[in-house]
Image (cartoon, rainbow, N blue to C red; front, side):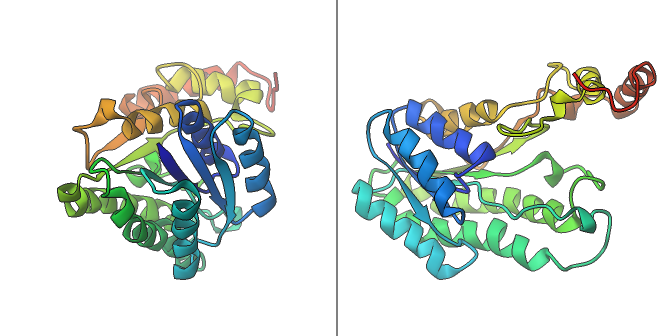
Length: 269
């Protein structure tokens, strides 16, 4: 297997790089953060097989083309494309109608996914079993107005529909296209939601599996969709949220509220 992961230098993207590498894939880590991408690639390479970094701005046509061209040249072809790159979240824009960051979300989440799929498609079609996995979010279908701006919500919703469109467009070439939609996920580095005792208690109350997800949880779903075990699955959005989305909202919120009242404000583990 030969894979490209955009946004692979940190967080969920880095976890996906590791998941694919441990599944036997050669991996290209594509990210605007060149130094971080090189660090991840070096660690991946120590596990055997090929791993390299590509510093690229996928908000541009040239950047997307460079990612695919470099990967194909280095790996001798391409089997898997993971679109994980996304803009950082600006907390100042939460709950506001300002369109200031829509252009960036459109370019990186939507336009880049289209351009990368287009450039990669001829290579993915060679084996007749190419794979594209887009990393979406549960906020594509629900609203987290105090965590994400509307451009984040709308671009992820568009990505889900784009996933379905690409699945139909490329199905005849043997290319499967799916998406993974993460829920609450703890950071791999730095402060985690679960480090806060109050937050952790709320998570345990509202998430049926009683914990936040990890990058590894998301990576496992991506690896599955990229494997022959999922050979007849395409056009689907797989939600990986520990059951959060199926919990009845009022009851879950009431339980979390009751737990929160019993804890000191700002409690940490």
